[in-house]
Image (cartoon, rainbow, N blue to C red; front, side):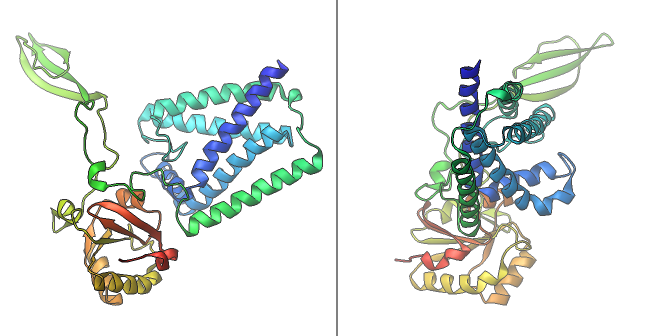
Length: 365
């Protein structure tokens, strides 16, 4: 039993460290996921939404530290109670999401590994069982090092997490797991390969047969029934292939200009998903950057989910030399974790992507 728990201890600890690190690499992205959970349509806790980023940072650092504490064997009672509390909470959350189909991706592993709601719930149930084994076998969890060495490891882990979080919050994720990372072509990301799985639908046809309602279920064909057709209900029972880049448009006055703009040999995108939440002071620097890019022959566009009144006011206030287009807010949040942020593209391929704190790193050939 001692050796089994030793293996479980290392496995659970490493899993928590990996899961926490992936989210620590992108705490802004995890905060977006928390906002989704807090929204009225899910848990109906909107008063938590303004604190989503702070909660995100606290949770991911705690997740990493609990993994470290478990492996080194420091304060086992505190560690096991904390792990148990966290996994019970997340098991409830993933079950709620799966059963009521509220959130399609739990964000457990950020954008690195996508899990369906039921896969997330299954993963949490397995972890719950393993943590319960550790909880009831806590006497076997002994420190791996001397007290001073253990405290140093824990302290260094905490400092490393805080420094890392500070860096990615003021720049961009060190590792970009999204389909808009530097080097990726947006247009290619929207393509569907030949032979890709197609969605499968189930149709429940309702008929009035001799005064009795009958339901005939098919996968699409209209059934041959001697009765009066009442209606049909459609359910997607198997998802088809979804391209990495979807819901990507660059609209203006109801027209999508994405196809043409993605063929531009020199294109600069200034992205601000929501001007109400953006660091507007940085647009004085963006003005300089956009002027410099225009002088080098680049086409500069703005992309936002804000209203035209807001974007027009911003253009006028900072004397910007470009127009704004409308793009879905979730898509813009996915493209760059900065509000505002800047991308440089060559025929749809992302060559540069920077946080507003790193505008001076942009190079226009």
